[in-house]
Image 1 (cartoon, helix red, strand yellow):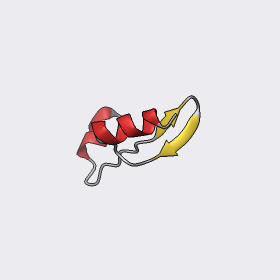
Image 2: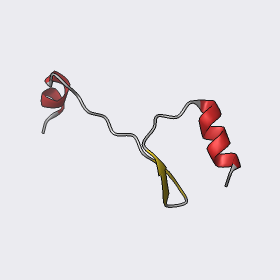
Image 3: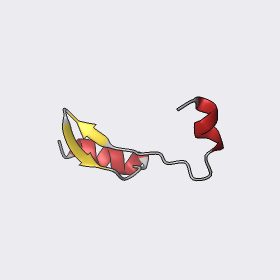
Length: 42
């Protein structure tokens, strides 16, 4: 897929994942506060 094809697609999909030290935590897009809380729990 080219950049132009991706940009012109009618429903772009972006996947977010959070891994800490190789361990999966969430697919949620984290706010700075939520990220700090997640890291503090480590």
